[in-house]
Length: 181
Image (tube, rainbow, N blue to C red):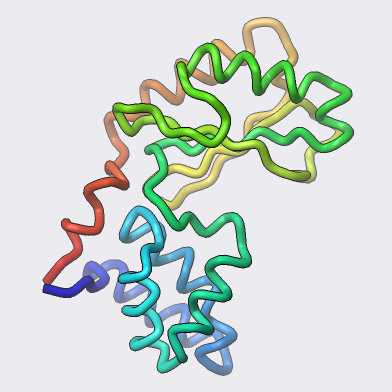
């Protein structure tokens, strides 16, 4: 059994292919589509994309490993990425990261045992005026920014919002098997 896009994923794939002049130009958007379809980009997914795009597998691998937004291992349903670049650091980015480690029960670079959360430290997310902040990449492919997290009670409200959303999100650890033909 091999991986394949869902019907909706195949439609998105065809739409992406129609927007770019060649398959190499479409590679990054297709990698992100694959991540939302399969939960993460394994070597098996890279091989599938190389075949679909008629590219050498090494080209897909080199692109996937260059971009940190392409996950090469299963992440949590909510991948929380905390900015700790200078502006965020000066406005509480590291304190936010420490608080999240404590509240989520995981260290930076880890995924919770229930598969709900992953936590990462990232470079600038272009929100210097509203620091500290983090970005959440959801397992369904959506991305959301949460800013002004130094305000009293703001982090509690955001974590409650994320916890409520967990039930609606697919488990990236199981998504590969769900997309096999």
